[in-house]
Length: 535
Image (cartoon, rainbow, N blue to C red; front, side, top):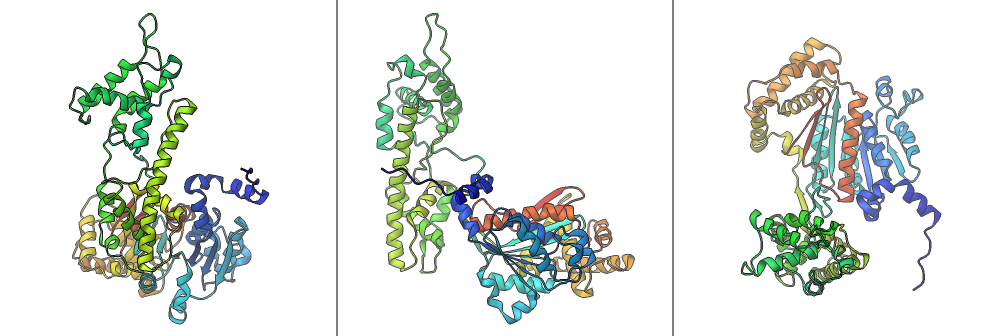
């Protein structure tokens, strides 16, 4: 076979530029990001901090919608505006400097308000991967969120006022295949070894193998041999209890060779086997959350409009019921272990081959479903990726911001319940919402002109919200005073922190990797506390 052609200098430079993030979400995740198009409404300090952290990793394109002129206040808090920007369009000026961070990103500035776009060109938002809005009024929030909900475009609404900040993610449904769990369970199938694995393990005899190879036997084979020896006296059952697993560890210790003085030879692979017993002996099973997914209505009642995710879930169910015999496809990935190269490579290839066979079976079922529905085809690479991560699939079913703002009975009950709990940051949520109501009624932020009078007015806005949820009295009036003292000002340090958080969430949504925050995130810069809520 001919040697692969060397990578071009351009590709090499690109890999160098994006090296760290490629380690996080891979080539396919980077490709998804480069195909993404982010819309930012209002280039405030928070807005530009969000874009900065999306442009640097290489999103395909950004569009800023902003009809405002840059003011002294903007220039004082926004690193992406210059003194010469005063009086000019804030979005265009910010975009010019943001694009200097990454020449590969395309940028556009639209110098009209989102309200005008919604009225004159509502289809404008259909082309975006995610829409992010900062510093917009309550009516605009409701109208925009409802429109984006209707056209199924993800929406992130962000606030940054004084030491307080928040963002709210609105998605109808967001499916994550690559969740990257912190503690991913190994998939060894020692309790139900497939034929090729069983044959390879049976080829080892720990008692008679040469001493030079004894210290290079992979630990999963050592564990399986110990289980086989244990099963002779235990009716071929599977060790489950702590006592039984300790007995397996004792057998492993008995496997260790001794020198001429009867002292056990230090062999790292047997130490690894002893440590891995608890995790390696977990029985192979179909996780309940995955069972719920593949038997959900979305996976069982497919239509031509069904997403690729649900089509693959349906095919996965067919595999579990058929070839898988109640189990998911083999992952095909082994943890590191002390072993000779020959032993480990052979073992790894056995798992990879079985994983490929399982993925092929699922792919055939996907093709059958696609043919029946007459919908767009799904690539074999996508199916392989789906099978590799089928143990940790995750789906978020979101709610509408417009519905939340109407304070229906479910939302009201949720807010009221959390307000009654001490040290829960629902108070900050209420104050931020009240500040929006104040701004919509007075066309300015509370505390912007008159502190004492605005405190009373903001209290009235809080009371209005509490009346809607039938919760009295407001537990912490000092937060109302603080909100008025902020005067609607943005602190760059708060916006920078929150901007990084929002950018991470937007990238998760675009790449469909890692679990995004489900619903609402609150940040208090004064106490450095955070909280999440699901309305």
